[in-house]
Length: 400
Ligand SMILES: Nc1nc2c(ncn2[C@@H]2O[C@H](COP(=O)(O)OP(=O)(O)O)[C@@H](O)[C@H]2O)c(=O)[nH]1
Ligand SMILES: [Mg+2]
Image 1: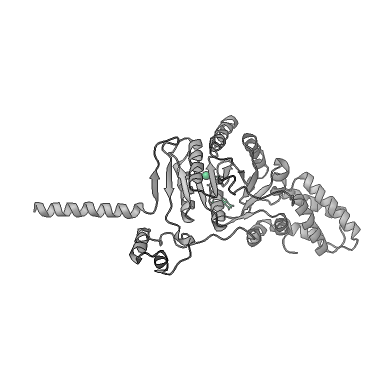
Image 2 (image 1 turned 90 degrees about the vertical axis):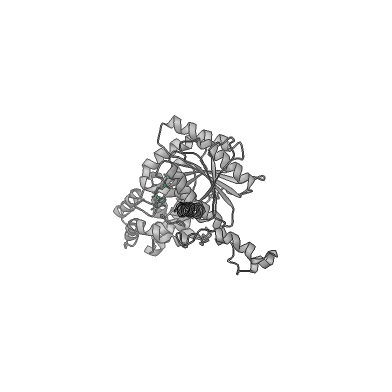
């Protein structure tokens, strides 16, 4: 009887150990040696098999001159792919041309602006009232006073010169003028490339809920899609869930996430993330931060420290400010606090697919003097596009 009990006991222990082994494979987290960033952990995603060509079985083995079993062994270690279908195997699309593809998202929420503008422009002969209506429509779309008068004045002059301008011609001119106020010549390249033997480092800042973590995840996908190697830093240590969220984004595309203890020092996570990027010769390190709306001084202290400490490893090549486009002018006011705390080099306007007024892009750029580099057009993993003034203006106005 005792033997039977012991045997059952051993069996149970083996079973538990087996289950433990299996479940731990999905998210392998290695605790680093205690050092500057004590408590910082490095999450190793599953081997990025999906990004590789799905080589026919045996091909790799023969290429390496290894017996098939040796190659198959690590595959057995992979967790079942079923729980996250598609995502794991998915190679994110390259970033080029995304805005045009996602245009309908924008057009959906902008249709009232486009319709309003086009209705006026389609009229036989534009009266003073019509021009005023045009002006009001642009103002209502958050284009801002200065840019609106610039657009309307130029359009008026051009339509006078063209005496017989048709609705279609005026639509084209409107797009030209909108493009002009969107700053077509601003430099919108992202500083993601390696620089002097070190990775490009992106710091992502903004208020809570603006879409920072989502944007970091989407950026990681863009970079992976463009063939870059990436390390993520979860410097939002305020809530563990924030790091989990980021880690999940990273895992989907086989990207490492460096994270810290809940409540730990965000600066040391940033430091460790950059160090890991340097060690692994990554192209880009992207650091997510917390966006607590505490005091301005507190925010400045924290972000300033994150930046300073990370820069002990490598210069920050890009500081992206994430703004929720649906917050309109309020968002611009909040943005100022951040621009005072860190040297913001680019803006990401998120949620332009929602109820946001597209004209906010114009006011944000004008008021902050910083180019909008990326736009978020949905919650989907690839709903982030490089900002292109002309394509954006066309989407705002809509089909004629
Ligand atoms: N519709 C839409 N939702 C977005 C977009 N970007 C982020 N979100 C959502 O906004 C919410 C807050 O995002 P999160 O990244 O957690 O914000 P954080 O607090 O700044 O890190 C989430 O529900 C996101 O899915 C976007 O471009 N469009
Ligand atoms: Mg977040």
